[in-house]
Length: 280
Image (cartoon, rainbow, N blue to C red; front, top):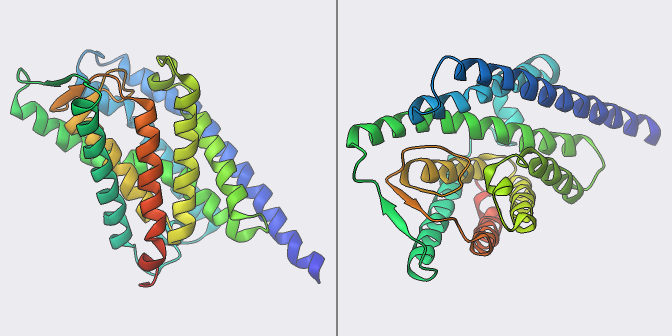
């Protein structure tokens, strides 16, 4: 009996890891082709078009994941995202609020304590900023949702079907999340690559733990969206992998400050997770 109970879980785990690998391979290869094809039609000098094209591959990723959920898992998208009967809007907004506070603290500390230069773009018109915001809202949502489904929901559901410890699953998910960001300019142009890699790894680790704590990706998704929206539209920084028209641009971020705030914001999310889970 024990053997019969374990076998389906193992089979399901191996199958899902195979589909995960297949999705990633198709996303990287076909996504790169789509991005290159679109850039052959539009100049990279136009930041608005460039920003949109760099996000085109995430529509492909989202399509592949939804196809997997519908055809292979055969469950509603919401069930793949969360254990709740409804989307946890409170957790989503809480995650966004915590990240926004962290970004404000980071910017303030960078400017007033670390003397990092902050440039206000007076030459950019309000119309351009509004167009940037209008683009960023849907494109950032698609990007972050597809990444959370791939790197968090996939392993959240996998953990529920296997006997593997959630903490081991978090470590594995974090390693893959780090690997996926190794081509980012934050790493390739950094003089402190170890700390940048550590930042990506801890981001993946903590947010996977947040998903387990909340019983779904909503809080992590809210944090992810807010982080990218803030960088895209409010304060970007030199060497950012996100090319946009923000209101301000700062000098390079201090990676040790970023790590500190990542740990603190993650601790806040985890500290309040049990209270947030009381309301289904």
